[in-house]
Image 1 (spheres, each protein chain N blue to C red):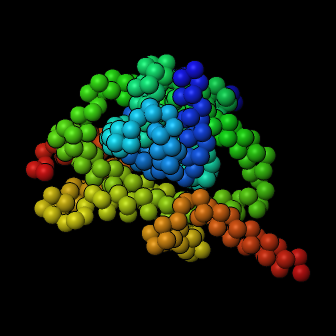
Image 2: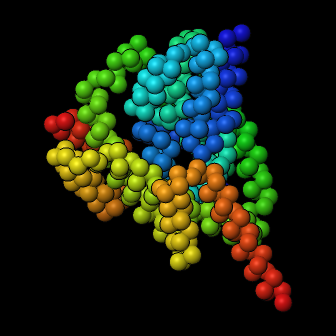
Image 3: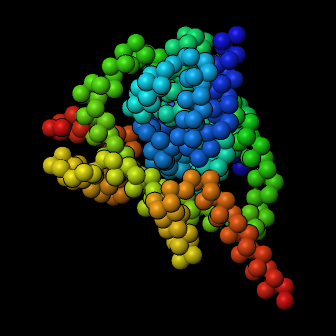
Length: 178
Length: 186
């Protein structure tokens, strides 16, 4: 029964995760009080952990809760629940788009949406840079230098895979006197 | 000429890598997606990647899964979407379960904190790099530049959710399209 509930609760969460995982937070808080699977303090911890481990934060969260509540099977149920809405909705969107992609109005709209996404990426950069580099300190100045170096290499050495930057970043962080 | 089918394990493995090296939110995934799906395997063009991101912003489900599902679907249908989504999910799954016994102390560990600061700096550079590379395909005239800047400004100044911005762009596009048609029809 718990397995079904895990699936259902995370299915709802996934269904309303529009525009980023942050929009799932109200649902997660609600889940906490309704099911008692985790306290709000534990939720805060899970968020911190999910932000620090590889992979999409939503998947980290669902796996963590599911495993805590019902072991491996629980983790499968919760994660599958979270993923399921995507599979259905994207399936529908994909086939709709295939049908209408060549319509001039659709093409125009998407060309504008692409420009919008650039703005969204810009905002993501702005937010991340804000938390990483501010307030200014010796550490953040050194970090900015490392940032500029990474950016330069990223743009000039096109063949270099992002994962090497991630590894370099980790090493840089460890070496840094925080 | 027979087109070489995209391998299911190729999909799985690529999205596994993407999931493994995504630290932080959906945008942090973008540089990895660009490298694997656009540069390496040509599963999508830069434009298509931006399209998928636009769709992912306003559809239910987390953007990482939406993106994986879409690309998998495009290359190998339903089976492809299963493999790509599984690939994306597996690193998280394995790491969280393996770490769950030590997780309570994981985010407090000083080495983890230090390493993650460094990773976030690198991700900053990667995101800006992707922005610059992708904007060449998207910002093709001054109108698009204004759209991008407006989207940025609306988020910074008003804190608008991307969903609203998508709606505004759609309305704007419809207005432009239908007023233009009227002029042409005259």
